Image (cartoon, rainbow over all chains, first blue to last red; front, side, top):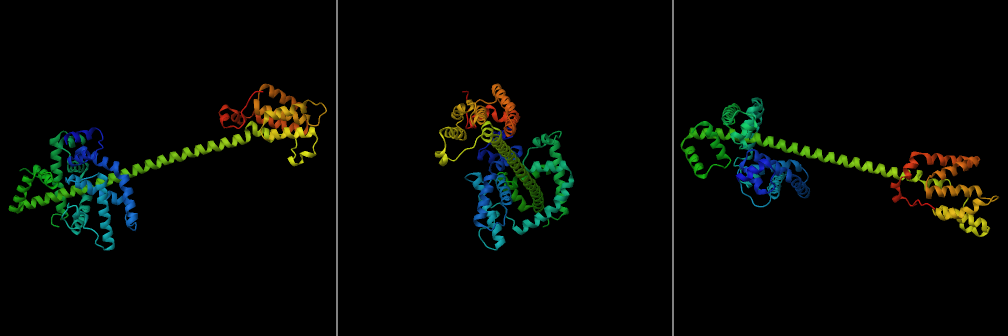
Length: 202
Length: 233
């Protein structure tokens, strides 16, 4: 895996396995791999989704939105190490189909398939609960954006599994210790922020 | 365990990177120690919030990527449209120049002599019939043959078609030889001796053959597209 991720830092890799490994590993290689996957496959998946919607639906959903939502879900699954067989595009399209069916179900009050999160066993929160948390997150995000670039950048890189060395190099910090210190301080600030919005109680 | 490592531990736990044995230990401790469980829950929520921010930023990246690739497509479509327009303009220009300013077009326009319908040829004398055949040859763009047929008419001092024949020969030579020095001299001589409509017509041809559009229409790159191949007789 190390070889794959090292290669991705320097040049693009086009095999599915290498890209998935890089996404799982995170860091700059993972970040590149995410955009590499999107750039390589988004056109074909959008066409498939468009055709699927035209064939099955009433055109209520936008193919681009479904493609984005399903891509984020796919990346989340890859980051959580969920195994899948077949080509990336097939996996992506599979998620997109289920997402769309879910939306259709909600819109027409029909039970077609299980909730997509339930289907892929990623999240155990109920949709209502997730929505409530999201609402609080949106409020907290506004305040988080005022915390300053450095905090935001360090935490967003850390969440993508960048190493402290990579964070220091990317943000021109004096070293990994400094990056770790900033991450710790900022994480504490965010915790306080979420306490302020009662996220922990909900 | 210090707090810095605690965050990393929870991050690994939530992202499925923590080994199973350590996961079990963590879960056992959470079950045994409510304050520790509370701390894990708070760190987990904070981690989820940061993940939420990451996916928000990733979604923005996807939108930006789409916008960029869409712009590129529009840009490339724009250049293709410009190229097609240019090619169409060049094609229209080619047709216009060739249709108006080429030597065969000038020759067709300024032909002298009245052509008679073929069904009336029976009533013509042999001399008139030869003249009509020469005109037909000319009209059918057989300039070489027409030139030869016009020669006898141009050399008869008291002939009816002398001036017309001389003029038509000049036009045949224009198509076949182009505007050579000799042709220019002969045209000037014709103009000097012409009167009325003849003079107007010959001056128009002189003016046209001296224009840059005629020179453009007569350049060698037209030849492959032209039905009339210039040749020296």
